[in-house]
Image 1 (tube, rainbow, N blue to C red):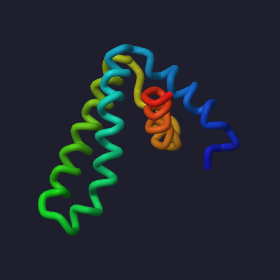
Image 2 (image 1 turned 120 degrees about the vertical axis):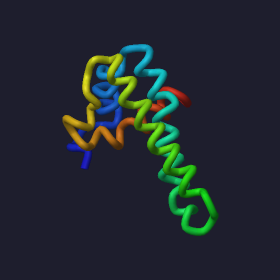
Image 3 (image 1 turned 30 degrees about the horizontal axis):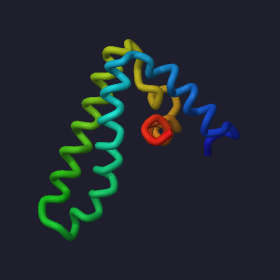
Image 4 (image 1 turned 90 degrees about the vertical axis):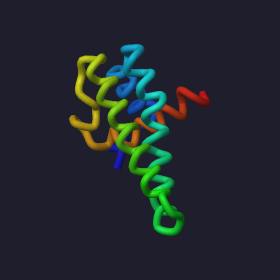
Length: 98
C-alpha cells in the first residue's frame, strides 16, 4: 500500500510540503481533530449528539488544513497521492511524541 517506501521516507516528503509556520500550526491542531472525529463517529450511533461533535471536529480540522496550505502556497499532498492521507497522522505523532 505504501509503495515499498518506509514511513520515514513518506514523512520526510510530507514535511517538505509543510514548512510554513502557520501551516505547521494549523496541522498541529487540525490533524488530531480529524483523527478524534473519526474515532468518535461510531459512538454517535449510541450516544446522543456525539455524531454532531464528531462532524464539527472533522469539518473544523479540514478547514485548518486548507488554511495552512493557503499560507504554504502549495496544495495538500493528498491531492497528488491519496496515500498522504495516512501520512499526516504519522507526521503529527512523530512531531508531537518524537
